[in-house]
Image (cartoon, rainbow, N blue to C red; front, side, top):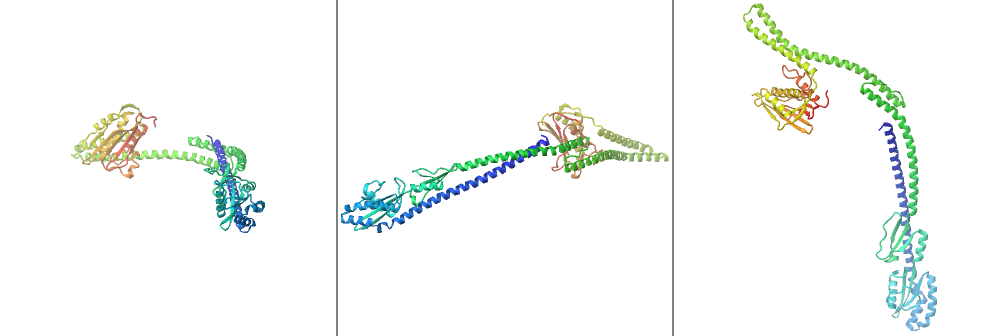
Length: 545
C-alpha cells in the first residue's frame, strides 16, 4: 500500500471515527435529556393527579362529616322513624335529597334507614345481601370512606345520626370519571383501571406507564400511560440531521485528505526511493520540494549523501590500510619468533667452527635439527595464512555424520585423555566431509590440549538432531575453560593463548560452519571445562559466502 493511499485512508478513518463519536455523543446526550424531560413531565403529571384525587376525597369527606348532625332532612327522617309516621314525611324527604346532592356536588346521594331501606334518593350499585348489607355498608362508610370496589369507580362517603336506638344515614358517592376525563385533557395521559392479576407493562421505548395508588383509590390501581411517539419522531429527525451532517463532514474530510496526500506523499516517496538507492550504493540527490520542512529535510539528506560518499571513500582506504597493516603485523610477529632460534643456532655454529672446537660436530646435528624445525614451523604458518585467505567453497555430499565423528575420535585416541563419543544412531547429512573433518579435528585437538596435565582428563563428543532440519555436534572437555574476557573474542583471527599457535583454527572452523549455513559457538559455562556446539542444516548449505 502506497504512502498516499495510507494517508488518504488514515485521514478518512480519523474523520469517520471523529464524526461518528461526536454524532453518537450528541444523539445520546440529546436523547437522554429528552427522555429525562419526558419522564419528569410524566411523573409530575401523575403525581399531581394523585394529589388531586387525594385532595378531592379529603374535601368531600370534610364536607360530609357535619352533614348528618345539622341537616334537617336527617332529623325529620329520624323523628318519623321513631314516631312511626315516616311515610307521611317521605315526599318532602325525596324532594330534598336531589337538591342536597346538587348542592354538595355529588353524583349519588341516598337517605337510608337502619334497616337498609332507601328512604330517598337512589343507590345504583347495591352490595349483595339485600337491605341488611346496605345498612352495614352505610355504617362502614361512615367510619371509613373510600373507593367503591364494585360498579362504576366512585369515592363513597357516609354519615349517621342516632336517636332512641334507631339511626338514619346519608350515603353519597363522587364518580371518578369526571376527574379522569379532566386529567386526560390537562396532562395528556391515558388512564384506565388495572384488572385483577394484571401487572404494569414493562417499560418500552414507545410507552411510559405508571401505577397510581392513593388512599382515595383504596385497593384499586389506576394505570396512567403516555406515548413516546413524539420522542421517537424527534429522535428520527435528529438521526437524519446527524447523518446528513456526517456525510458532509466526511466529504469535506475526503477532499482535504486527497489534497494532503498529494502534497505530502510525493516528496516522502521520493525521499524513500533516494534512501533505498543510497543504501544500494547508487546515491542520488533529492529535489527540493514539498514545503519548507520537507525542503529542509531534503537539504539535510543531500548533505548527508555527500558526507557519506566522502566517508565511504576514506573508510575503504582506511580499511584496506588497516587490513594490510594487521596482516603484515601478524605475519611479521609469527615469523620473527622462529627466526631467533635459527639465528642463534647459526651464530653458535660459526663461532665453534672459527675456534675449531671439538664439540662442533655434536652441536652441528642439534643446530640443523633446530633450524629445520623452525623452517617447518614457518612453512606451516605461511600455509595456515594461505588457507585462511583462500578457503575453498564447500563441496557437499551425503554421508553419516555419526560415522564421521566416530572415525575422527578413533584417530585421536590417546592414553592420557579419555575420548568419549555419544552417537546413538546414524545421522545422514549433506555437507563437505573434508571440511567437517577439519572442524572436528580442530575442536578435539583443542580439547586434548586444554586438558593436558589433568589426571582425569576427558573430552566428550555428542551428536544429536535438535529439530527435523538441524543437527548438532558438541565437543566438550573438563579443562580450565575459557575466561569471560577471552570468550567474546574467541573466534577472531590470530587470537591464541597457545605457544606456537596461529590463532586461525577456530576462525577457520567458524567460517566453515557459516558457509554450510550453520554456526559454531561456545556454550555458556556450566562447571569445569568448555563446550563448543557446531550446528549444521541437515540438507546442506543453501548459499555460499
